[in-house]
Amino acid sequence: MAKSVHIIETAKKNIKRNRWLSISTVFVSTIVIAISSLFISVAIIAQKAIDYYEMKAQVIVFFKKDAPEADILTFRDKIFNADLIEEIKYISQEEALGIYQQDFADNPDLLSTVTADSLPPSLEVRAKSVDSLLGVIETINKEKETNAYIDEVMYFKDVVDNLKTLSNIINIGSVVLISGLLIITFSLIRITIGFNINAHKEEIQIMHLVGSPDRFIR
Image (cartoon, rainbow, N blue to C red; front, side):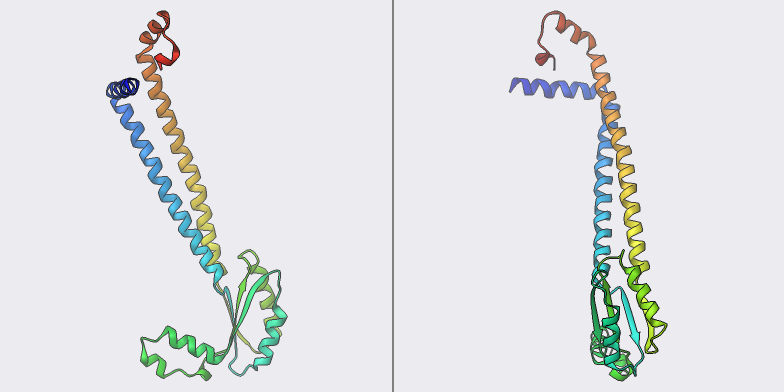
């Protein structure tokens, strides 16, 4: 107990003697912790956004309204690649109408003017990963050249790629910045310790001369 009190009292004296250096060390340490927490939080949010978009349909193939369902399903089976594609979902005109009604349930004016016949059937394609998405898009675009029933192909690769790029920048930037701040913090701590050692150099030498053990000196 007495030793603990002695350590605390000694620490207080050292802080008073090197007040500004001690304040600087505490300030930088606090900044490091705050910035680290901020960057970690942002990185987690960015990764969750990437995961969200990866779980959604990344490619939507819209067909002409008069496209036979059998031909659409044949196209689905033709482009399916188990190595690249996680799921292909067929959305009929009736299902498209149901989705439309859910999305615009609060706007009766829009609902009254739309019927199933006015909406196109589609295929929603979800790749296994963003990295395999390019191969899926290339396959669909190649088939589109010979398939007269395909009206439009929409894909969201750019959104996911931008999120991945942003996430990588955040991760690299946070590592560099936090590493730099940690180096500064440790440098300040070493300088503080050095000042304290120099301040008590004579006392330490005297203690060694009188035979005090290192444990007591610490």
